[in-house]
Image 1: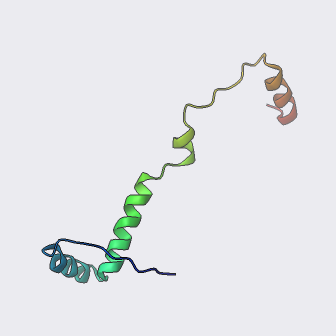
Image 2 (image 1 turned 180 degrees about the horizontal axis):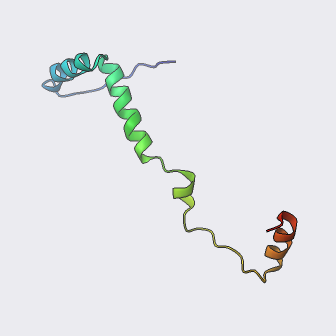
Length: 74
């Protein structure tokens, strides 16, 4: 479902944006939406990037490690 929003853009950019959107075969709305989507996706980090370096493996003599290794046959 689409929603309408109002954007304030420098009036000198409007004809350029319309021309560029036409050249790309999109409407200005589609162009803005795709550009925003790209920027948002760039900022989102993957699970592994988010948690990298936050976990350490247990020492092999740790009782939890021994129980898990028996359970999962590590």
